[in-house]
Length: 351
Image (cartoon, rainbow, N blue to C red):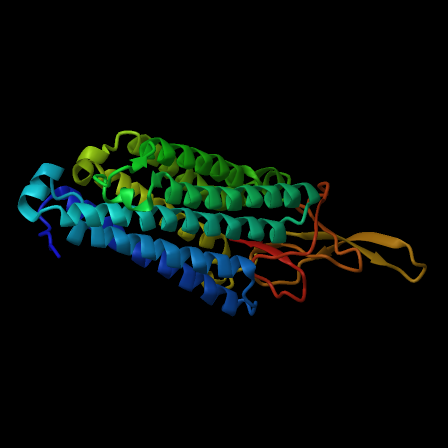
């Protein structure tokens, strides 16, 4: 099998991104799992989904590295590759496009499912839960459709890497990539904006709301990469694939790896340790039953030495409100959490 020397800027760019974004998502997932342990919380389905997404993302980057070193990605034009190394590298490259596409869609699907599962736990609001579930179903169907399209677009299947096969035919692969990428972008936007109204309505200091919106809004980076990927894919030429694929390969590998990293960011707060409690943060509005059985609504201070807002349910209703401490109207939330004990039902937004 041919081995290509790393000589061009395109080769170095693909390898640099691939190696960097093998390390970063693995590190992010490890930190997320450590943070869960620090907060004494067991792993849930959201954690398992992001681990699976990370495995697929690392696999995708590994295929990209193989493509540079063994299949001529970025080395030069197809004519130069064939004249120097023969048809074997080109055949391998077309074979590698299949796992590249499948790993891309699987990694992104599990990343987004992980985020949606996290939303349903943090924001147990009926409307959000139903939208999250519906979006999750769309993502699963999109993943199946993308894989099915990749399997059927060339008939027989060998036509993917052997275009001289008698009687074979292939559909427009560039258009297929563009359509699946566009659907992916739509779901990216839905996942990004879904929690924003609920974050904005929280009754807490403005800077804390802005901080939370920024943390959950980091997904905009994935949307930008997804949009750039679609633009780059539309310019890819399968007739000169070794020369035109590097940028598309970079964005296709970058998107799922970044998605994994961003899916972990909201849960890394426990790694920072406790911070000094600021006195101006007050407490939450709780409902308790008095001896007569009637609800007694009152403010209870946060007995905590860490700078945080707790959305902590009290009593059988499991509802609580958050206020800024100056008599503001409370916002309610159900039992869920970012980094508190699972038994106390707290949703901790720390800075």
